[in-house]
Amino acid sequence: MHLPRFSLLCLALAGSGVAHAATADRPNFIVINIDDLGYRELGSWGSTNRTPHLDRMAAEGRKLLSHYAAPVCSPSRASLLTGSYPKRALPIPHVLFPGAAIGLHPDEVTIADVLKGAGYATGCIGKWHLGDQKPFLPLQQGFEMYHGIPYSNDMGPAAEGVKSNFGAPLPTPKAPPKKGAPAFEDDGTGLRASQPPLPIMEGNTVVGRVRASDQAEYTRVYTERAVTFIRDRRDRPFLLYLAHNAVHFPLYPHAEFRGKSPNGLLGDWIEEVDWSVGQILECLRSLGLDRRTLVLFVSDNGGPVNQGATNTPLRGSKSSTLEGGIRVPGIAWWPGTIPAGTSTPAITAMCDILPTFASLAGAPLPAGRRLDGVDQSPILKGDPKAHPRDTFLYHRGFVLEAVRSGAWKLHLAKGELYNLETDVGEARNVAADNADIVHRLTAIAAATDGDLGREGIGPGCRPLGRVANAAPLIAADGTVRADAIGPKPKFP
Image (cartoon, rainbow, N blue to C red; front, side, top):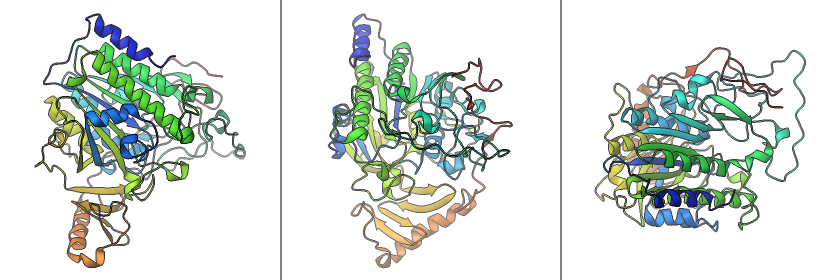
């Protein structure tokens, strides 16, 4: 594959006169979700990584400086898709693992369900991570098409390179389980004792097994599929959820990017992600869809500092509720509607995406279902008087660890209070000087007892999806599970 391929394809289509725009008052939506991207990994956020396409996107759009995800992958993605706090829609202590008997409940009403009901085409490409058994997969959650790896790119056998970066020695294999021991252990969140081969899926069907040599291909494979989706649905409004496995460990940038950045493999892969975003935006421009498409670029959680990510000036890392673990870079792009070259410190969150898109599409929200998200379209459009969200709850698994109201953030366990407008790095605890604010934020936390609960599963948490006889999609011997997913080849 050559880098200009997809742009040239879109240009050719545009020149042939076959491109048609969606109805002006029903915009298209694209969410580009990057895995483990740190807060300060883009050029427009001060990084030395070369990200010209994302920098242009920011210059033509609006930077979301206080956008909140979740500390880890699965909860963040559940929040994005359901318009709810992670704990409400997917009450688990950490993330889901291959072969888990639980996942996002099929009765959840996702953003794809909402927009599909309003006549939108819906597509999901890339990492899913909300359950890999059939009832939990994208086609059962409102998406009309899916292509991708159903969980993280490190959830496979070490011998196939998924526990080490490109070029690094393979780690020493763990001792095999003792005779009679179960091959997998279910602790209620997934099957942890060993991890099976990584599958690549088309719809509900396993169509391949991901080897180490394949890992470097998927950023561009996903990009090609995304461009094809846009091209094929250009005559009707669409939702595309493009969730890259990049830049999650193990780091596997394509050969054309390796060794090119000043910041090692991570920088190389970030620059490949930037190229991918450039392909998507150029395709929209070429097809005349740019002024009718809202593109939102986000990360699913803060960057893992122990793996080289940079979250400066935030303190903390992935898996924590410090700002560096949960605040992520966000860019909203919609030429002609979102004011160019602007930024906002307003609090926005993954759970706001569903109600915002529904509002812009004129689609009704799910009836009889509590959402935690708010319509952020006034913020995106630059309304200086808009303040849709004042409060944000920082959950880590089942525990409410912090509360934010306006500029103030209270860490509940230690009673530490920070003013995020003047101290975004959470360096100066000012609780002693602001007892009234501590009291107010403590009351906000206490009010959650009757809903999500400060610890454990509260009455407002919705049930998980569950299946009987859960098992990995591909067994250790390469056999695809016959009763789970469709035609069953064996991958040696």
